[in-house]
Image (cartoon, rainbow, N blue to C red; front, side, top):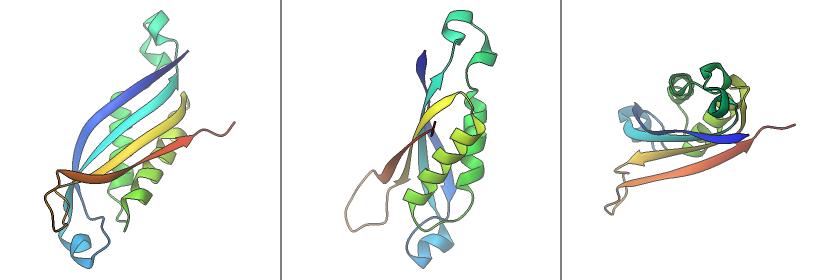
Length: 120
């Protein structure tokens, strides 16, 4: 049975960006994660048969703290790390959004969404 396990609105501060200023000053970001999980906890009520939200957050933040130029790379590496660290996950979809992006218009967020499927 496949269930989607979500972690929504993980806010953090990072130094990702194309410009040198973004790399130096940093910016607020938001991370959302959906994991497709082969689980049986919905039947057994056993937490060992699903994934831990806290572990998802820890993995995402460990990857996020490494500086990169593009949010595409950040999102892809978070998704890859989640598939590695969560053996029950069959796919991972990760969005990384910059809050109030530095563009000449008013925008709430700008970002990307990446999906990775576990290779069989």
